[in-house]
Image (spheres, helix red, strand yellow):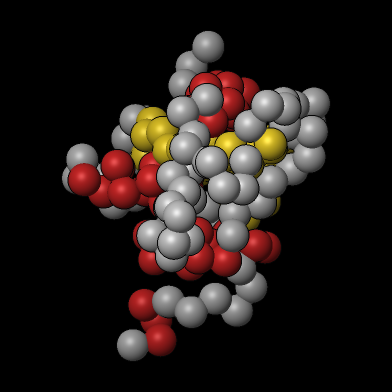
Length: 137
């Protein structure tokens, strides 16, 4: 299976979810970010007792890709659920993650949400209508 298919990205996000550090919420989230060049970067959420320093899986994936020199992205798969449970609902990115996506992606950037049975594909514009970005400067 090619890594750039929706199914492959979801499978990689599920695998990344296994590495989540979530002792406070108990919610494990995994993300798989596809770059324009076809490389995939994974992320898992990392919680912190003071909550502010907590990082979502999506931002971890973007940070890893940025550290490797990537700036153009095609899509991201996101899955989440209680750590001991398989995903059973779509788990959309939080507002901060949507804003980070808006910094690096266009409105047609795809966000894949899987509940383990079905996949919902949304664009960044659908998840962040009237977003604030570079064009405001």
